[in-house]
Length: 231
Image (cartoon, rainbow, N blue to C red):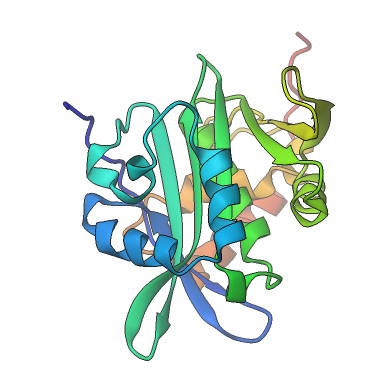
């Protein structure tokens, strides 16, 4: 199968509340063994929920074999941490483009890493990646009996809708404002979308450093608002 080369991007380092450092970056074909190890070590329930959310008429092997992905339609991020000197995946966030401006997403966090804020930050990063691809909507299906995921989606700005085809499943949707051109913003950019504007200025660097992020944030906050024309 002919595939489009996977996207490249900077590795960003996050510090969790307890001081643990994890890294988020795009998936590469070289991550196949890491993904296999990740999938095998998920609990049965977590793995089933991941497969159910991520597979829409595709083979399960696409989740763990990035070399087979069509990167024109896919976007995938992994969060990794070092365990006794060995890099391991602790979360996977991805989307599949399902229309001209929308994509369906899936998120899974390793069982022992849940409840530490990784899922929320991974969803924010995935939304920014989708915006950079010109997408306007992220959509996903969440079982009604998964209150933790439903709460997380709500915290991340997703709207809950009845599922058009399945009982017991909620359709979660999030609008993605377009990223502005450099130097432009409107008054709303600093509300839910300041991170997207900041990412667009910093994520193309080979690595993201705190000094540059501070400079970008100060510039963003001090730049004068520019009103958008009504549409």
